[in-house]
Length: 340
Image 1 (cartoon, one colour):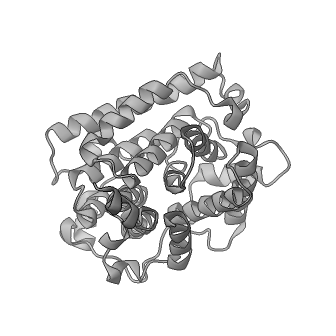
Image 2 (spheres, rainbow, N blue to C red):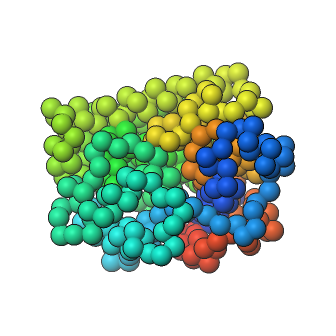
């Protein structure tokens, strides 16, 4: 991709719009198997957006994280302390909001209830949970311009750890943010899984103490390095499944059969990558494939939409879809900020 196209494609707006569209497309099918979805929606390649195009907690929490990052970066460099406070406040605000009625995950609810106190956030973190609730919302970390690698990794892992303290939730969030960042910068989809696997190998024994504090002590591991290695190992196994699935692609088969149902972090990452990489230049087909699965279809399509939008930009989404999406003005204002 040329430098000019990378600069003009509006990757942040594209990714945020795509994740909300995927969320809205997959929300009505979330707890159905594929035969039930086909009975309700017709052929999967012709799935249409519901009216109204309502989103789930996935988009709501993405916006909460995005607003928290915006507040944190308003005062200069992104730091652990500068990020944790505003994001914690945004998550607690989401927890209490009357619109928080979109089948939110138990882990997010439990953690946010505990975050609504003066305890250290590490004590609120659910260190036994690697649900996909941490990586479904992490895309903004991959879209903020000007971050160092350490800041991007630290922010991705810290936002995950506020609710989901399992090391696999942290690693999967870091990888998702990395994937969005690489695609936004113009990386070719063909090499993406290889780049993510290399990144996972390099990160495997590294514990980001400055960002995570003593979180590892709450998880029962012998050392911080052993704690993180658990997460990276599970993500490497998941990425290998994506690589294997794409060696002999089967677009008409439910992707969950090869890469997992997506209720847990590493499977959500893997199956979203799988759906995106089956159709890297056909974003609506990728969204529809992710939404027509037996798994966590709103989160899978949400992540797939973030990847597709980061890769192809804002102009790829049809107007008749993007203009109807819930929270559109909030998504566009964050996108415009980071695209600028």
